Image (cartoon, rainbow over all chains, first blue to last red; front, side):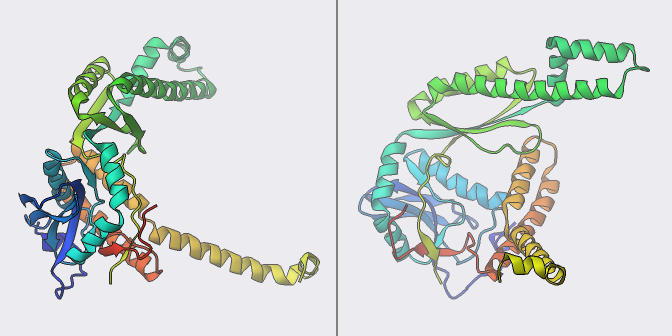
Amino acid sequence: MTAAQSVSASTDPASGDGKYVYCIIRNDRSREFGEIGIGSGARVYTVNHKDLAAVVSDTPIVIYDPTRENVLAHEFVNETVMREFTLIPMSFGTIFRSENDVQSLLNSTYQAFTDVLDKMKDKIEFGLKILWDRDKVVASLERDNDEIRRLKDEITRNAASSTYFARMQLGRLVEAAMEEASNRYVNDIHEQLKDVSVASRSNKVIGDRMILNAAFLVERKDERSFDEKVKAISLQYEDLLTFKYTGPWPPYNFVNIKLKLEKAT
Amino acid sequence: MGLLTNILLAPFLSPVWGTRWTLEQVDRVVRDELTDDTPVKEDLMALQMQLEMGEIDDDEYVRREAEIMKRLREVREWREKFGMSTSGGPVRIAESGEPE
């Protein structure tokens, strides 16, 4: 897919010199990051203001759709920058009309950016999604929960005569036990990761198999311990849960600067 | 007109009033639905998850992603029609400057 296909139609050919902003870093000289930008490998460089720099690439004035291709390009730039710098990620698709507009962003938000960069110094984010296999969890509940086991045996023994209500009751018991189990797993995992992380945030779960969708803020120096801890936990739960572990990311979930931006017409 | 008038005239007033209320309600519900991209974004995340879990292949992903992008664009168009804010497109720092 080319960039032209993956952006929507509002191209304005008269002004092809917009700036796509990936992130803000602290650096007092200009820097090049290679031809890795959104839209088939645009040159990525910095727009500087005092000791702050916006990492940008040139772009036509378009609206970028959040396709996987575009989102990956955005993330790839941030990953590259992150190897050397602490960064404040911008949200996907943020475009300014000119270098001047980027500089006024840095100028007017200087203090907030500086504070957040100090706070986020040498910290990285990891994502942890945990999914369960319903059948396996139900099986383990039937093994370990006396009440469920007893009721189930009873229903199986008297298959013909067992009432609708007994089955209903079993269903309800299983549901409640599953919710309790989900909370128990999630609390245990949070507890175990507490010592190796600075903060955590739980996002809304996606789909019906997911029981945890969390982001953890970790000191760079603790990256290894965090890693090992996650591996140990996933071994501990290997029969029941699937772990989707990603990172390191820029601190997407822990930076919350509300920029007062308006449409540039 | 006070409450009493409403009660007194109820048989005449309420059908009209009731209908208008319903239309406004429907109008609002429709508008909320047309301009809310949350469910679309959730679908996109779910789709990504399916790909990551190997439940769908790349072709299937690309096909369904295209549908979702179309829905996102439709929401954006509706938001523009209703004069609501949209994400994407060129921005600049607002005059009032300081962030929250």
